[in-house]
Amino acid sequence: MIEAPAPLDRVRSSLAEIPLIDERRYLLVRDPPQLTGGRRSGEAGRALAEALDLRAPSTSVCLVSHQPVPASHPVVAAVGRLGGEIRAFNLLRGRDVREWAERGVADRGLRLRAGALDHLLRVAGSDLGVIAAELDKLSAFSGGEPVEVDTVRRLVGGAEAVEVWNVLERLLGAQPGRGAAAATELVEEGHSTQHLIATLAGQLSELRRAQSLLGAGGSGGRLATELRIPEWRADRLARQARAVAPELVEDWLHQLQGIDAAIKSGGTDDRQAMGRFALGAARAVARAHAR
Image 1 (tube, rainbow, N blue to C red):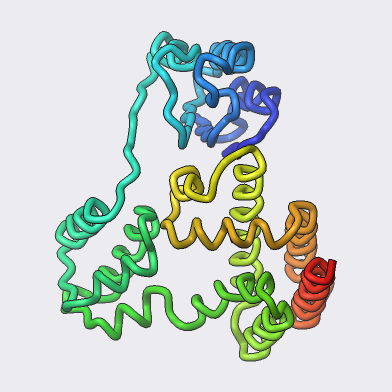
Image 2 (spheres, one colour; image 1 turned 60 degrees about the horizontal axis):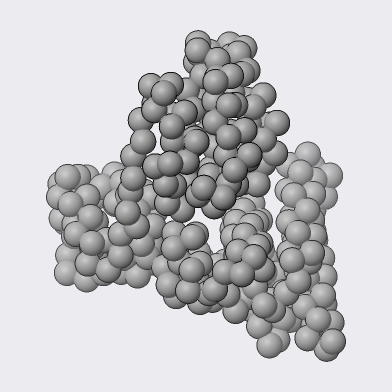
């Protein structure tokens, strides 16, 4: 999988690469910048179209764009010429999301008590992948029996997940020390350090992308569509994006990567490492507020 903004040379070499062991390679390229801008993509779009001609016969490739791509785009023409298929999926909202989830419940033979699906949708928002994963989990857990609301509340977005999710929100709030304290308490209470690191890293990556979109002239209202997230999360991201510098977000991501590697190799104590990270992050935010 290649995430944007990857250089075209990396995409080109991956397309042409021959599998080492398996008979086929599957390449997913998410939001290549060459697909944005429509007719104005010019040379960049044509370069990606030409790169598709280099695809090895043993490689299957999927290009994903979260922005509409006009039919006149050179990559669209190249995909058609090479025998590929183009599919468009509209972002579901409101009632459409609920109807999609209700069909998923029926397809799995789930029996959810009143209010159970409401809680799931409040936690997952409009992310169909999250909804499907949670329905699969509930289906495996229920064994064909009715699922009570309290059970759904425990299994879908339980208290630990909510607390972990709120660490970054507190770090970037008016009292960043509360975020450091929350992270330390979670680890001391025995919650998974790896889960905390993965959650923070995912939030920071999303935050950095939001900063990039807003810095390029995007508005907070566009974040929900661009990032395929609920509007309430987009509003929070827009606020967080203005609270911290992009360079600091990238530094935190590098620190978490280093902590993760050190923990897995046995080179550091996970509690101490997360404590130092959280305190350092809180101090950095406090200094930014002071300035």
